[in-house]
Length: 417
Length: 114
Image (tube, rainbow over all chains, first blue to last red; front, side):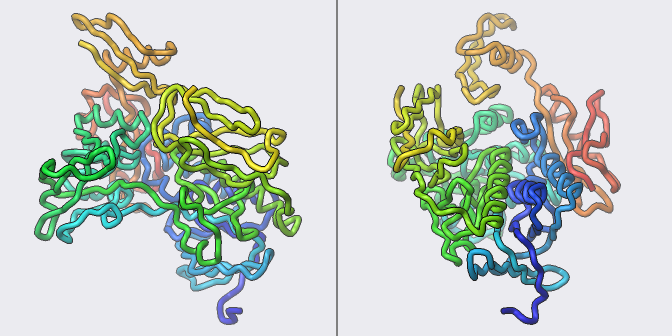
């Protein structure tokens, strides 16, 4: 098909060398598959090498690690097992010719290649929402970064992006960057949160108290002003419907604006080959093998749904690999009547979307709004789990046994106990 | 004086109140386990944090090595520690887990190699 491009042959190509991809490649190699992992960065690990704070791996490694340590453990395992990988390898296109004939075209310092493969696990992570997507207008000035960009500058390259900082969004990345800026001697003047509650895990919200950083809930940044560099930002209060309250505006002077407005799964290349997307997660619709609507294309990690814990990302990578193994051996995942997972009361998203009932499965879900003293219920099978508190910021993960998975559908709801 | 915390020991996120009188903890309310109580008292009497930063490295694939303190550091000592970390310069090779410096008996450990 591409006669001048050198051809490689594998059972499985893993696209993305973050924790999901590395875990998938490791598991695939253990399962005896001929696997190739591709990553566009110069180093393995995805975003982990820049997440230098502790808090990773409590579930997977049973000890608390920093991001780079977590990544280096997975990388070491890959090397020990002899998993083939290429860094600085940018995937240009995925082609799906038939169930067991797929092509991944990538460029690299040694040229372009086409890889013929039977299955693909897509673990390309997520992208950050930027200032334009959250309605910030004003001057086009230097000093506006996403939280991840600031993190790359500071914690990979050792460059301080600014000295007087306003952070938009109180999600985990925003709070973690607030701490990094404060630790390195910058003045964090405010964290501005649109919602009436903080967006991050409780342990990260504590950072604000540690460094005396003011948190403005129910506020948003609407405008940036400066000549050449950010000089000030306009903040406005919002009502319960998130509408701006006239007359509530005030200005904060700063030289840097950090946008931490959430992540969106990177699925452009999957959409191109017709993978069905769930508008709630922003990631693909999947079955319990984490296979997308295109047979033999699997997905894991933040490309599947935005996770808070790397441990679950690793788990998803492994599940996808086991699915890929079954797919390759049987020439497809056997067709069956799938049990559909439906969203009930106060459930914003739930993954996977379709269950087979031939295996135990983890459901990952998020609620729409915070609630206390609730029960997570699946009425069709009489399952009830008491939870003292649920928050949109904290993903819930529940295990369903194979024998519980039956009928037309299972509805997951979170209701007052 | 009453200090209020959201407990971070486990995902229950208990709302804890610690009442302090004359510099002594008088009462801890809102905990549902002893670990939470211990944590909350520590937060009032001697809060400590594991601290992370990056230090420049010569001859590595990336220009910095990330580091952490091998144990939690008293909160009020953090600015002093950061000034110490700002002076460190390393040369490759650096292994993950290598002790690259020591400050007041606390080991500074590389978390990313070079």
